[in-house]
Image 1: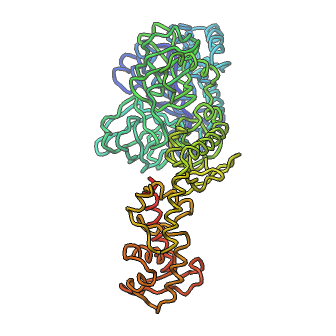
Image 2: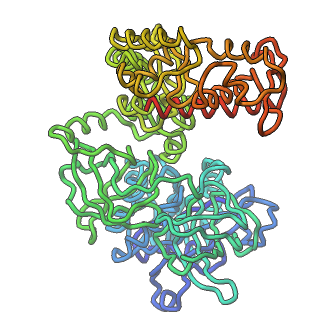
Image 3: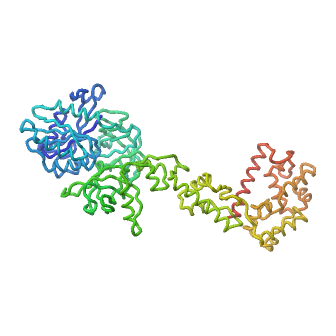
Length: 636
């Protein structure tokens, strides 16, 4: 299917022309037909055969030519907002000028609107050619349209009364339809609503022009305000029930959900999780200079009309603050129009849907310079250079294709910025090690704050990334080369030597808390000594000489197997305070294992690293996790 909107001055025969082309009545209301004046949007369609002839067949069986749907818009100056709702989502136009009246004020405003929207596909129909010579009007209209985004357009002189020129017009419409781009079927759905009504037995039905993507029965959709999801209960296309329909197409959607009774023209249905709504956007405006725009105007996009406040930034760039957030993407085209139409409509190209705040002096001037370089065409690499870090789903929701894969999780990074972050991280790790010799590892969370990163996974990725300075992660800390172990200051070194001197006489009689306090070994100093490999911690506040675990296992192997806690304590010449955590430590290391609630035995393996018994591995791993948590708490 292809969808075309009409455009042109009031009473130039737009409705009569599409009625003659389709055999269907576009005016839905009795008052419209009685007054001969279109007041609201009308929707009719026909099928164009390969040769352009229309048979009016609407059975939708897919045979023959392609269906062409028309959105018939009002031409009166009081209904320009309705006209904008009709042409906003439509990629092509049938522009109508009457031979007996020529170019009129609404012809000019409708053309300005189409130019502002960047519409590039059109056919000109000069109607009422049976009442006046169409050639002067045709030449004038073609010249005017050539100066806009429409460019050189084909034109046909027609008469809806006599039927003259209708076949030629169908042929031109068929050629235009074939030239229209085919939107991707897998695109994210953004369905601007032009009607919403209730059908007894079915509930809420909405209609609109589906510009891209595919709608299916059973789909979940959301509105821009983030209300509860709506379920698609049914679909119709050209009055036929369908299970799925792809854009471009006129669709009627039967929706069900908590907010379905609040739907109306100007609202939008979206693919969940794929769109960002914006109430502040930076745009390029044309042809009116940004400084000449009124402060308060209305933004028209799709079928929505939202009041906005304009803040000029550069000669042709401005910041718009919307009264209602809309799902916008980079490159979207819209129209700024002052209510009443006293000024020429202004075209808008969306440049940024997540612009930075302008809080500092000179920020607006700097932002204008940045916007001057933007084209409005989505550019992933350029967007990354500006944003430095952005989540991939957010970039896609802005309408910008990612230029490369994520660096961590779903985070994308500008390559130069990423390299700079890696270098800064190495500097911060070295600086922290110099300032904290007892705990030289920079905590990951501290690194995240220092670099101003939004996610800790980025720190992990930076640490693993190649760089001039290698970094190592261990237990939530980052170490540079040569900083894996703490450097003990002289007072701590002396205190550790004193402890080792005490233990030389009784290697399994760990010093009491009072002795450690006397030597000045607080929890932080003890943790540093353990991390440096100068002491072995077997429990909370229980430290022994390095290698005490292997020596204890050697002593216990000489006991009759199995043995009790009391027998082990006497063999090791220590206290219960030390023996209990030491035996648990030996269990975790695989030196010993429990026989029952009271007894243990030494394991037969020559070295705990060679032991492979699954149950013991599980207990050892559990013990190691407990020890790691204890060490982390001590260091904290």
